[in-house]
Amino acid sequence: MGALFPALTAGRPDRPALRFGDRALTYGELAGAAGALAGRIQGAGRVAVWATPTLETAVGVVAALLAGVPAVPLNPRTGERELTHIVGDSGPSLVLAGPEDELPPVLGALERLDIEVSARAEGPLPAEPARSAPALIVYTSGTTGPPKGAVLPRRAIAASLDALEEAWAWTGDDVLVHALPLFHVHGLILGILGPLRRGGSVRHLGKFSPEGVARELGAGGTMLFGVPTMYHRLAEALDGDPELAKALAGARLLVSGSAALPLHDHERIAAGTGRRVIERYGMTETLMNTSVRVDGEPRPGSVGLPLRGVGLRLVEEDGSEITAHDGETVGEIQVRGPNLFTEYLNRPDATAAAFDGEWFRTGDMAVRDADGCVRIVGRKATDLIKSGGYKIGAGEIENVLLDHPGVREAAVTGEPDADLGERVVAWVVPADPARRPSAEELADHVATQLAPHKRPRAVRFLEALPRNDMGKVMKRALTHD
Image (cartoon, rainbow, N blue to C red; front, side, top):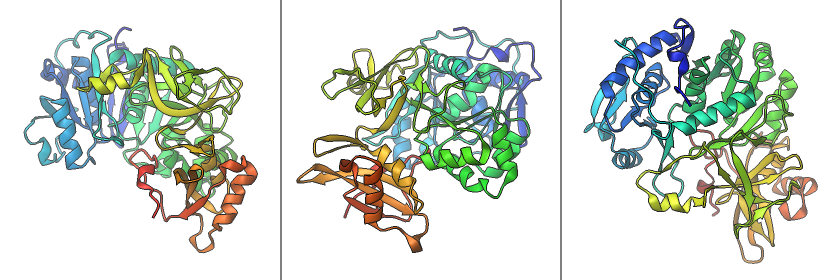
């Protein structure tokens, strides 16, 4: 595997590495700052990192990786109860933070070490740890109980980033633009560690805005990473912003992840820029599993083919493998490969339950098209609806609803039904509340596009859908009266 970040010791120390607003570090400066901090934390056991969207967070995580000390990124917006659980479960010996950061009382018992981005190391960087050594402990969202800490080894980070190098033709000449949070796999591993492993550079916007995207892509950015909420806002802004359209059209790669990008946003961006957004599929526990390739055909709704080194299969509820590539047969995705996490920290029971032999049970439901490409139809727990003997994926109904001009947002859930077992329920945010379509119109719209059994039996209107920090709809918060 070699070093995680060979560019830190390569012969181009003046090459741009990180930029956050008007603050930046070259590779030489990053090696100095991270190397100095690594020397101070070696042997610390584990360190927590107060993960704000700043240079300090990037330097802190790189320093921990250089030192071979597992880092626990902390979401600054996490509530007291959840933060108490994460700190108690992971047991860090100290917390890394920016000098100006105000930390909550929950972290008061931990030794604090301020991250100084202007510091410079004396002497060589530490020796590279073993590829099996834990690198990061990233806590899951905790939708079914307290968050679990997924232990990600160094080999998983390297394997995923190198597989994406091949799929996306990602090189040291690429300049990545994004505004993703740095406490999560998407923003931290793909968005910060990815460019650094390639020897390229990243420009973090701090806070997302279409203006920021247009500015940075227009000034030499080659790649944009975002979540569906961000691409939705870009699509909304395109009509009145020719500079944004030009900047997006000039980017080499537009990538969306963390949730499905609705069909109508795909089409609006393609119509306004001539460029297609590609999607990929990953999880905290698996990092990246599949992606549309840069030389492949972008297909809205598809997350592409398995990445190099990733084994992927679909299975029935009884565990039997689904071999059909018919675009219709729904099964749970299971994956195996060097991209997988090692364990859930302190949870051998949960770790054992998550695997079927060497295969990780993702809980995501999908179909495979004739060419092997994967289309995710939803989560097993919240998006697979069993109605009248049929297995129905919520995602395809949501896409059809979003294709209706009167719908701004849509989510689909199942709810108990005495006759059908479960019935399909649509939750809709109208495009214009004063002229919203009727429930019957929307149900008919679905029935004409899909099979009759996928027709919503109830349509409920909302002002907004509940979403988490990554833009995913929190379906457990959608309850009927």
